[in-house]
Length: 244
Image (tube, rainbow, N blue to C red; front, side, top):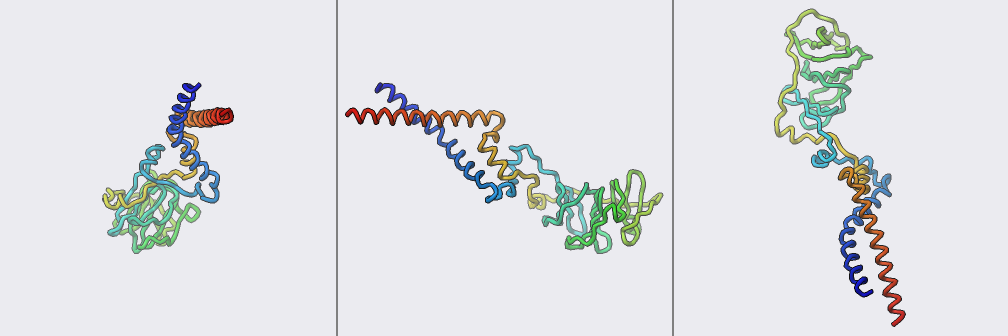
């Protein structure tokens, strides 16, 4: 019996050390998940590059358009003036340029008119006359905004509300350019994982893949063995103390 108790003590210590990390992880994540609403876990987003790579989330490549010494940048659906976020855009950006004192940003669904500081002055959607299916935007020789819809060209009136087909025009089309390296580094990473999902994956073990839940199951079994062996040793010692 003494030999059995010594072996049990040895295994009890080893299991305790192996399970300590999992006990701490399960306890910490469990406490946080019990207060999901209070801590607003689902509203907190993590955009660490290594975490996005771990989840297989790719950050969209930015499109940069030079405009009067500045850069209009689109990353995902977010529009920036240099590194300052402006607004979300609807649709795919097909061109950005300077017209008179305004910045024009064209997507396949709407036209945005911005001030030089990046403030939204007007949004022209399909209901206000913006044609659907625009694939490019530029300026002709008279600096008239011109768009391309498939193989058809159209030019705007002075209010940019009506677009009239034209058969031919010499157009300088807006196209993205290589973004400066320092500006690319200043942009925030896009694509994020909410904190609640990360904690749930840590708690269940799924953050390490399909083997994670099995690993957490083994840790749970180790905890039950710890409890059982601890109770057995305590009871055995108590019985021996009573006899003495």
